[in-house]
Image (cartoon, rainbow, N blue to C red; front, side):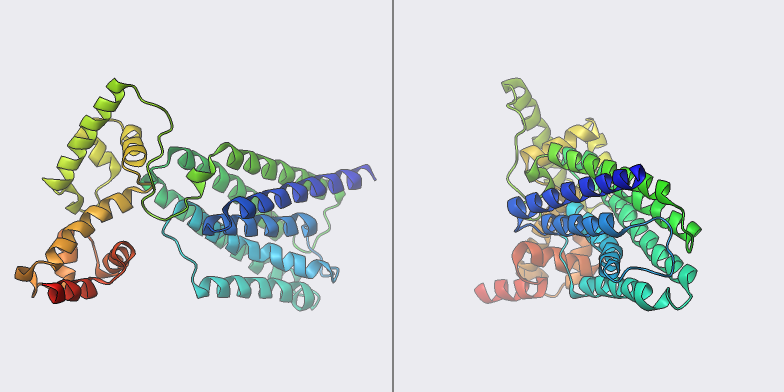
Length: 354
């Protein structure tokens, strides 16, 4: 009886925290995709807290099936949330919703038809392999995009938020595969509920300690520079000297043309630590992402070439490659995001205006 009451308390605490977090995100940042996905992830996690049990038998209460389905589909929301949280240019596509619907529908079918039909281990294994796959995607893309993130506090938060959620979800998925079809008892479920409540509390605390403007920008790409402190005149002069040197590298040497240029390479050329260069580009120049900073310089060069009558016959892909882009697709997307038109349309407009 004590374990049952303790488990209920842990579940209730986790659900309450998740509902408060979802309401806070939606209330304060309802126009920001990452915040909306964060609120959706919190609600899906609440469904998980209500319905999850260690060990799955063939019999699932009818009212549990929709909650379990939402809980499983929430791994897709987690993947999308990590994409939007750490990539300011990320946009939802119709097929993202289709993937969520397919995973949720399969989980519901597993509860209602597949497991009761005698295929408990098969259905549990498939569902949790799907969960592990999306966790791997989320962790992989978070690690891959981490070096380009210029917002220092977001860099620290991303590691904790993603690792905590992925570790809990991954261990649960492996545990479910291992004990599928077994009833492991009240103690295991109480421990799991307690761990979930602690993870939720830790993630909520981590998100509250980071300024909302750092996590959820109002616009993608460039945002007004945020000065976290008031520098002295000496610091201001030193920063300006470094910015001038950085701009010379961009304008004179066109270092952005180099293949696989990293912030580490750029910091090495300026003879300063990486963290200081990140802070300069973020807080003084207003960029949140290093790749956006580079691409804006590349696009400025491409705009000049496209508007030059002497280069009217030069293929767009040649102009893109000369400016430092590795292929035409990313160039077209980045160019349209900045100018509102495709490179071909931009060239036509400039020719017409001449």
